[in-house]
Length: 97
Ligand code: SF4
Ligand code: SF4
Image: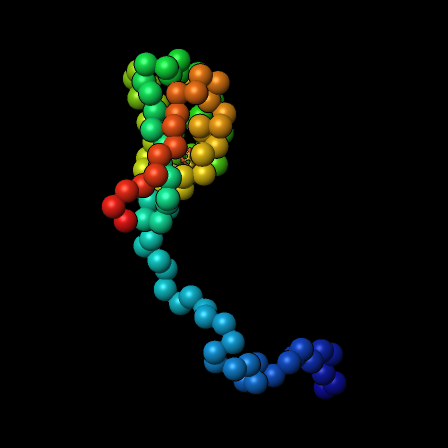
């Protein structure tokens, strides 16, 4: 039977050290490498929910009277602080790392 397609290349010719390939899942979360963290001023927050809406990783958590951040998941991008219409969120540097 005639072969219809050929392998594009011989995989055994790829050098082992061409690029690292992950073989295990990392347990690292964004909170392990983030350089800035959001801090909310509860007196300024009017609970409009825009930070919750704009957070790209959905780590803004609604509490009965305000919003908080899940700091294990927050990556410190600052979008919430940028979008807050009442400037209730400040981005502060992570310390002690
Ligand atoms: S966007 Fe600002 S004012 Fe609105 S809920 Fe978030 S922190 Fe509060
Ligand atoms: S800093 Fe970025 S990831 Fe963290 S809560 Fe704000 S929008 Fe979400």
